[in-house]
Length: 112
Length: 115
Image (cartoon, rainbow over all chains, first blue to last red; front, side, top):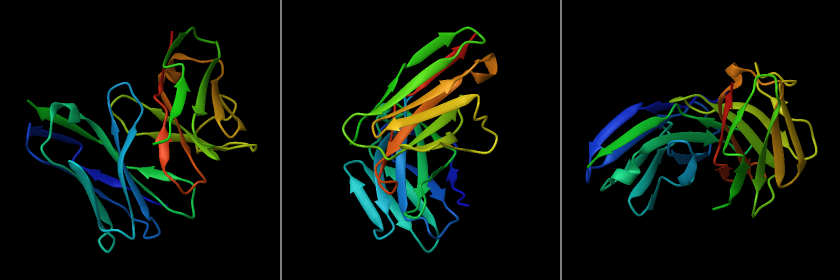
């Protein structure tokens, strides 16, 4: 089955700096890669996603890149703000299955 | 994005009682719903996958008789924790997808505390 690894587990950055979270996956059949933000006591919220036919996608301060050959994808947050502090999860999924495989999460702290 | 409503957000119950958690897709029909359990500072642990009108598929190690899942309609799935015990205390989260291939949206979670 699919195995998704996520690094780092914790990340602290100064406000205004950039943050990068990386994930790798094992199943070459995976073709959909969403990223979720989870605030304390709440459910995960989809913030950006990318499909395997695209190498990069950007939405304002957040972007996701995908390297299919190396089987890794990354979340980039620029100009970080304190409200970006949360736990971020990456995930991988395929069209053939009905499952999403999640990374172990990254706790991001943006220091004002 | 699509909205998934989960209730209650928090429940405290006595040991031995049963607790029902509801998960509704408000603006789309969810052919598949997933139930997760999450311990503090840990990732999401998939408990079961439910498809409308059929029996849920449970992950290995999850007791079917303990965690009853019903997906009676395309917009509603319920998780009932039967005869709850303190070790069942956890954060439970539902999610729903459209057509099994599309985006996955999560409910707001339910914090269950069993005394």
